[in-house]
Amino acid sequence: MLEVGKVGKDDVLVDLGSGDGRILTTAVKDFGAKAAFGYEIREDLFKTASSEITRQSLDARVKIFNRDLFQADLKEATVVTLYLTTYANERLKPKLRAEAHPKTRIVSHDFMINGWKPARKENYNEHTIYVYSVPESYM
Image 1 (cartoon, rainbow, N blue to C red):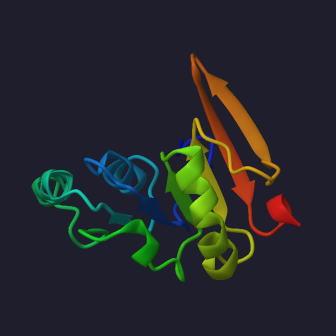
Image 2 (cartoon, rainbow, N blue to C red):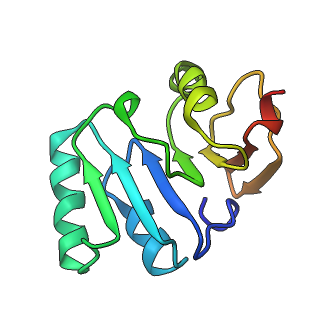
């Protein structure tokens, strides 16, 4: 997802539904992102991710919040990552349209955002990565 989304040193990544935090830590460590913010509603996954962020000494650049992804702050995001369902992506569309800045890349693993045209689509084994560009993908 990070490779297809072309994450780099100027990016601030927001991962909606962060799970164990792997996308967050990898974005900063391996792709050089300035910062990464995650939102995970499940407390067990939030705790696992928090521990891993601390273990890797990434607390200064990686933050995870134990909150619903609809409470996410997207104002600094240059990349938003999603591994949700098509239904969840559909529910997120109004938030993404309202809060994501122009040129923000929205990277979705396996699930399209219905009605939006991906700027890029890559297949890896049995997985598909969709990259949407704000606002071009939905104009």
